[in-house]
Length: 533
Image 1: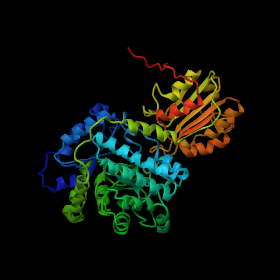
Image 2: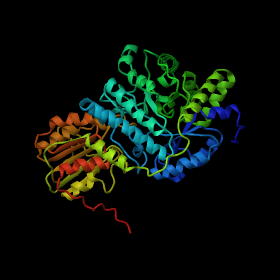
Image 3: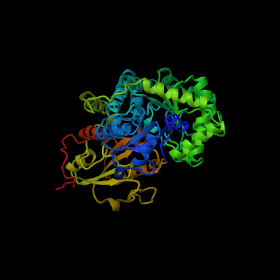
């Protein structure tokens, strides 16, 4: 496909698209090639006017190089974004990975002023590191109120479990982003916190009345809008009381009538990724883009097929189905947002000393460790991770979760959802002890509500497994990294003499702080089996 003239309709329409790319420089390094375009396609689309890129994967240093490369392929200023809700290090190694926002939501119940201060510093840290890496748009804060503990997709990503906490901390985070000179994005409008299904895989239904929405779901979004958030991301869920036919992303009643007119939001409205099953299973790429724009969105994020989306929108404008004045408005909003932030990339080290101290301070305020200590012994360090290939920032050959117990005589066994099952199938004795071997069991659970898992991890019988280990006198200790709801359910089962700890964060700093308390005399070993010559 050849480039069109700069003033063509197709080029103007292309500005509305935000396409997915790997943060790695090479095509061979792409982690998700089904969604991440190869470089040849990226170059063509950016040359033809596509206006934004969302990135995932690679190191923070590589991200700096990648963003410069992408900007060099475009003749216009790009929107360059990433889902870095928990700091740039959540997605790009070498930057700061911060504790999940819900940790500060719970801190807010005890020490509100401290939580507000930390949330603002959290936003500033995220924004400044994003800026140093070449990103100019942070897809956060999450403004969903996680008042449903069974929520498989929002969960610890939310800033609160009630509207007042979620509003206050999301606004504090947004304030930090503004100080850093990057755009923010309130998501997922009009609220994804009270769902029990994952819109990455299905189309959730939120059956609440308008009155209920005004009490719980909408206040954090209204607070973020009042605070000047530059963009709002839509949710792929149906609200029958507002629109019985279309999900919020494709609903004029939700995006134009409610968000634009009644809540008076004048910034950018961006879809959540249109490649998600909630949309892509029901509409082709062209029709999904047209329906979203028709409903009131400005930007089309991750269409299943970028060319088809552009073609569909162009056909809509040429046929009169879509209004060209709306195209002008969307492009003006995009230009206004970009004009509000610096054009240059910040300089300096990716992580400052103050930001490194913030990482540790956040962990310190979000861990709970009992008085009992783990005794050195020949036992089993049973580690459950919630991904087949966990983030190296969480678990690698030198992670404290592995090395600290090994220094005390424990043998590590790592479990994941795609590996050999530890389960016997017996309700009263669910762990297949013969598969684990002899010795006491230190149980470390890296579990938090994660997209694409459809809540499968929450169905595992860890409560029964703990009771089984207690009955066998083989429970050496329990550590939960991630879900506060899992910790809340397991803690009452534990004897007071059982070493136990909870950490909202899964990063190695969190492991270090927790295990230093549980194993006060431990020195991690170097026996990782990772020696190379």
